[in-house]
Image (cartoon, rainbow, N blue to C red):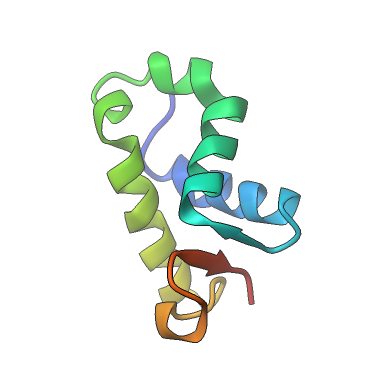
Length: 80
């Protein structure tokens, strides 16, 4: 069963697949396309995963994996 902490890796995988940069909606779409079954079976995470995906991005910024929000175009997430 998927957990909230899995989303950091999923965001990283989605951005890597997209060449290191993508709009938030494209990251969400990539996660859904790859992990739909995991999310459906994840209990409460199924209802919160898009919010939790944003939490994961914030954690990744703190770890130095993603550019700060102000350093990227609005709505775009970019790997460092």
